[in-house]
Image (cartoon, rainbow, N blue to C red; front, side):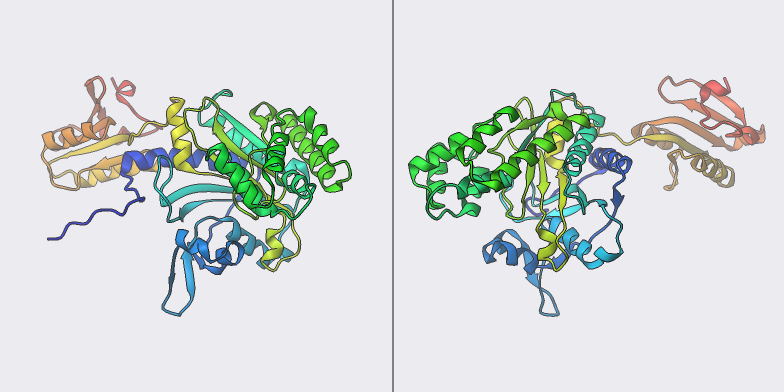
Length: 438
């Protein structure tokens, strides 16, 4: 018989690992719901043109793209933003503004596999459509921060590096000559991933000579919002720069009002690599630096809805990736335990299935996790299995006990056991245990 190995960059998640993912997902989604975000779902397969039209055909090498049976060039979605932009544009007239959506699902990118980065990955996308106000940017930041805090991270575990794409673009336009702002901003996004000479070469290729490239990079060293006036002084005639500086300050003030200002650090070298970002952008990092890569990021994409045939619509979002977020939780020592919990195991001895099944149903109706034998095992084998799944309580339904109108209730942690009237189990007890009948 042939044997098959899983593909590189894809993961098998067994029950304990899946329990960790579920707890992280549930926590992030619960916080999003409390902020009024509504869950949506989206297609896994989309027209490849949704990415190639914006980023060129070269991006096909990073996609899981192919021609389907209808001759259409399609791809497994590498991210969600273009999809939700398409969805919003399709029903914009029917939607009450602002629209606040979230979705957790898998994505696919054919890229180098690294720690915390896989070719199939899960993330939760959180987006606001229809508000250009800085409060929308701040609420996205607050949602992300509250989710991290609820997962157990402390204030000194993570930081948001906040920047503004329009500040970068306005600064680049202030230099004489022709500068490819898009290419230059991509270079800024790579500035901390390449050495200085390569970074300067990228800026030079974008149209800045080396002296102006260094001057531009020096301008990005501003790390105090109070010093943003220095940028305005550099290009006093740029209304775009003044407006972008004012907007960034407004976002930071709103974030402070929402209680997340202490997490936000001004970092103009944070640029986000995707070209559709427009205004404020941010990335989340491990504050200790032990997790060297960005944990997740987000920002404004005010032009994208129009690009998909909709009316001009401001939008902002964030997308925590679960794999890099898991690295941060592990580093901080707050990762959920990879365990599978079982509240009860109903153990059958002899011809007792009707009663055992009734007890299991009653316990499940109270919301408990209940298992019972489906393999015809012996008493000892069932008890060993109950121990292997960490069952808290074993309810033994045996022929001899039933003759006396009883069942045996065994506490697995201590090994203590007692009997309980079969008709009173579980009875009025919401979570009956050994202590209730001892």
